[in-house]
Image 1 (cartoon, rainbow, N blue to C red):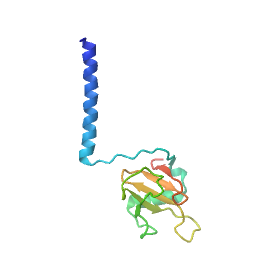
Image 2: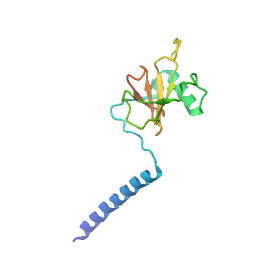
Image 3: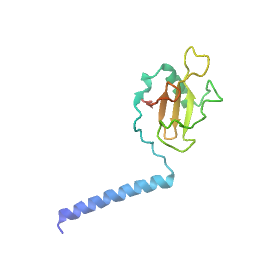
Image 4: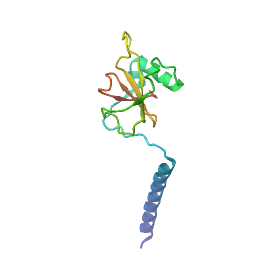
Length: 133
């Protein structure tokens, strides 16, 4: 066997070992990976209504929230529009709607892997929110 073939086999083996170690570590530590984004468009936080930014700041600060009985509760994803996760993975928060006399239809939904989604139409559609922009 030539030396270049041995080097190639060694490199492939090294890559396999590194990937196996990474996979094993994430399984043992219970580290959750962000869910796949498949089919959910992305928007910058600054492109959403300004009230979405206000709600995001409240989430980061831990409240207080305008609807304490509802904000932070588990979002069940019954519509199936977000990546499938176990119950309790997602939580929802009210995004104020100026002029509305109730909670309105706008929400931010957060996931345990730090992803954020926005709906303007009470879960009929979502965009994934890039909170860094």
